[in-house]
Image: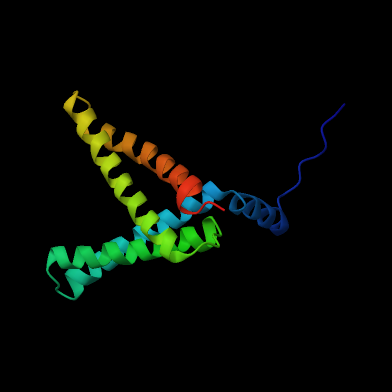
Amino acid sequence: MPLPPLRSPTCEDLRCFVRGLLARRWIRFGLVGGAATLVYFFCGIAFVTLLGLPVLLGNALAFLAGFVVSYLGQCLWTFRAGGAHRTMLPRFAATQAVGLALNSGIIWLLVRVGVSYEIAMGAAIVAVPVVVYLICKCWVFRA
């Protein structure tokens, strides 16, 4: 049986493809994380370079801005959580602390056993978001 002729994708095909991707929670999780990272980066540059704030103060304020974007994005869009912020926000903060500790632990351990920093960082970049996603799904924003 011959294959049907190929046709060019349409705008509707693209719309359906994007809608299908955004229906996946882990894709939304990654997009929000990426957006929060960009907010952190650009705020840090703005606070320190443009406004002349001390490095640690500018970095802390930039981290806070990224944290807010991450929390609101994950809560309202990724997980569409309906719980109380007074419960979810401290859990999210604890999860972020666990993520930082896990990231640091993975890098420390791998470098300690002779793996290059670049490879160790790659391993952490893959492993930590998976763990953070699972904690957010099962504990922070559970239905």
